[in-house]
Image (cartoon, rainbow, N blue to C red; front, side, top):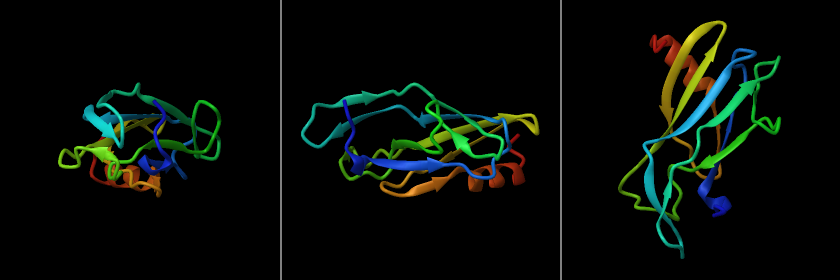
Length: 124
């Protein structure tokens, strides 16, 4: 099933630690209905990325972004059961940091902000 662009948000990561491993997972898995389709359980495989020598997030195709199912997409139902994405970042500078975040439809979310907060709060 191809998701409409209106149901996606773009995630980037600038100034993350170089050589880090980044895993993005739907949190929690949920049943969704896209406009005009039968319900489908969205249980994506974790999205696995790395960071390049400059600390920029890169996906498996070496693109500096990842498009994810938006957490506020109007054509994803039921809207009363919100979900978020979970980021897990690990690297030489720290063992593992994890946090949850929202991905607004049609907008860009930078993981660096969430990483900074997670590190400041000691979520290592």
